Length: 422
Ligand SMILES: [Zn+2]
Ligand SMILES: [Zn+2]
Image (tube, rainbow, N blue to C red; front, side):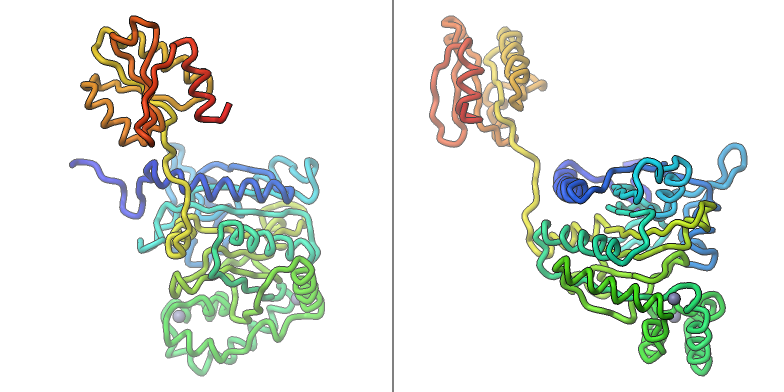
């Protein structure tokens, strides 16, 4: 075969589409019940938006963005994450005048040039949620709690909600100095990336997967112990409101997010079933981001869930998901002469709201029955010369094998009754 899907991308076939629809439907139902509305932003944006918001020195901006020049030489980037585009849309469309705070959710594909591995692709999908314009810890608790509720609704049993505070820009400055002082002694042992992070933002070293770095960082002073009074109060508030919401959580002081725009609350949902990189959903508060994007100072918080990782998790837990639904009725006909009559029945039954199909490959009657089996048809209607003479058709219950002759004028009513119970 000549053409193949690009490395790190893949086709999502019908069977999986139904599974995805299932997890999307639950998200939609839950989020809208809690007051969140859907949004969709363009697949590409000005490169500058991501560089400014995610941070010039982050791994994403340094090595993972799909960036290209358009025909007029403008630098564009396929979105690697959803928060910056949603913030851009919020500012550009004055959404604060529409609803304040603005509560939004999205299902969007993202693009990152990473090494492809199980559950990680270069084109992947996220279910995300953002709240713009609310500053208090009560909304943080709502956002964390809706994430946990979503996992409950999906019947995932082995997950854990972790929360932390990473302070604000004020308290982080003095902490960063402390962390640098600690790392200085082990500087030579750090990986190249972390040596770079040492200058740029040493807190990012907490995200490093390198074992040596990991053990060094394990004993490092933790931001949570050094946050300012305001950040501490905020964190206490988050825990207080999480308890009110009945959400189970643990505090993980090593939970630090890699993007520049996060501050105060960070959180993630992890599962032991997915191994080392076990976060299925993660998020945090990003109060500085909106001003950084050129808006007036507006607080924000949100999370994103990796759809591919979520599907892996559901598979690991043997949660049964929707699959391709069976057709209600498959219409067969004996001889090309009866195609017209058969089609009349097909269109008529479809109009009544049944799912109906017919063989367009012009197979023999036996071949048509085989297709009906493959489609798991509940009923087969056979249009044959003998019954046609009496303006009737044969209806076969594919489950029990029972057959009955039904007058054509009563066919729709009869099928509706047995399929939908009237
Ligand atoms: Zn602070
Ligand atoms: Zn490292």
